[in-house]
Image (spheres, rainbow, N blue to C red):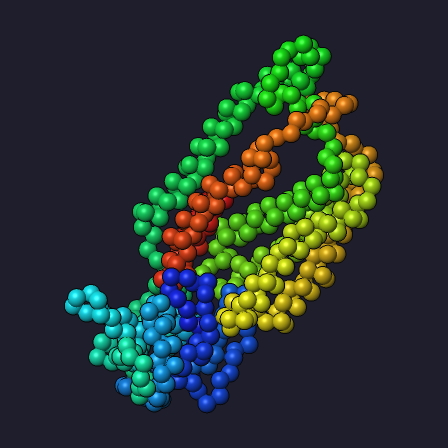
Length: 456
């Protein structure tokens, strides 16, 4: 028997929203059993249950009846609502993804009357090569539709058929069938994003170096000769730029967390470049994120402690703890809130308590000790070398008084305005391409790497 599992249902326009397949009044087997899944599969919202379909290898089926049900008014209204929202179903047959729409909407001749239909019969077209399943396609027929327009009880017979066909594609290349063709528009989007980023970065760097190069050398080497000159703008603060900040601990912890995230990103890109995250290695990306984040905690501890000691900080243990919780603390609180909402709506995105416990244990038993190890190494290196912070230009003894600023020039407004442009770009691109990744197919690993790199 070839393994066949049902997974989830959800709106086509929002792949992040999904619910269990048997939350809808479909036909169920006598004993519904959930497949035991690894942490990686749970992280990508996979909930697999045994299907009521029986598709034996190379055995055709003709109008096999799953069950006969009488849909109540509430169930009819529920099916009509999900058909209106273009819900799709997802199954897995021999680890091959099977998906299709649950129903269809039909318009009348005058474009005012709507008809809602439910597909109650699925025709499975299965391709095989020798003893292996190569591809499976679910098809629907216009002759087998159930009208859901009115709120009345309906007798429905759910059925299915299957036809096996020989196919020449070898088993090793069966995944390639599910890859999307990468058209010129995708190449244009990637090259446009990368080109615009490189052009803006190069232009900004050239202008900055040309304007600041002479001033930087002058203030770093011979500050006394510049005292009589009239200064404006940023030059008023050139002697205060590298003054030790008021909140040394927070500054060093931010640097340590940022270095850890940058290291994590580099490792993920390297693995993606070599094709480790191939599309049907389900959950590999999320597993790599958790494991590499825990292992790179040593980088965060080392960087934060070394820099904190260079700033003449005394309480390096407090700095280590702040480094460990600065990113993971808000992240965990946000996750708990969203996971609670997902549990309330019975969505598949909700993580069970057992898997959450595993993630917490990974952070407690792996990430936290490595964070402390990195801190100890950084502290010993500082004590051994006794290196002090070397500013690239001089710092004045008396801080310059900063006049009060207008509300629109304060840090909160500046951060909000600076984030509008990248937020808008990412929102537009995700809204355009996320449904493609989530529903219709998959890109080859190298193309996926280039596409995700363009976001960065």
